[in-house]
Length: 165
Image 1: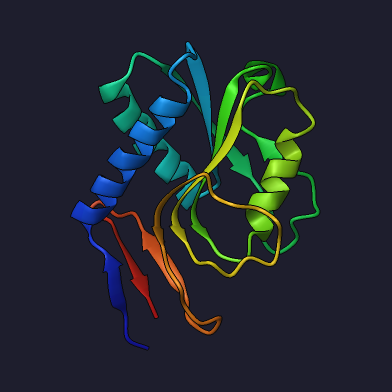
Image 2: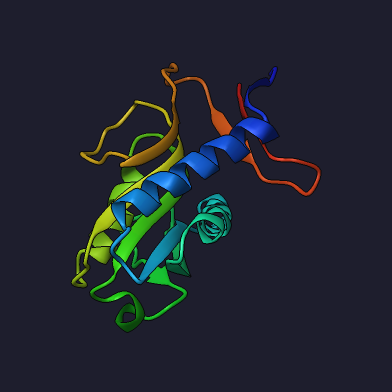
């Protein structure tokens, strides 16, 4: 299978910066927000957004890793911080790719059990193939692809990129 690069390191950096500005605009009145990244790439992306956000705003950012069993999302969702820490705060649930929406909707469901100030979602790539009623409030790029195609985001020390195959 051939890989078609859809986002380069520079393009990913630009998208992250733009998402950080959008989050800042939305949460401008907040003292602190939580960026909850879905384990693996979503958490890495949340960290990169947090870094960009710290450069442009005075908002304190608390990172939270969200562990969802992607093959069995009905299993309990866990987080790296307790619900008391994110209760009544603004929260952004972050993932790298929004494909069917299943992972994101189970993540949203988990956080609905706790009162939150504002609750938004962010993804780097929105595939436009949603089977579940969830949307990304902040997205780097929308991509119309076939269901047979696969989008992968790679965060590596040698450089970040996203490809389609």
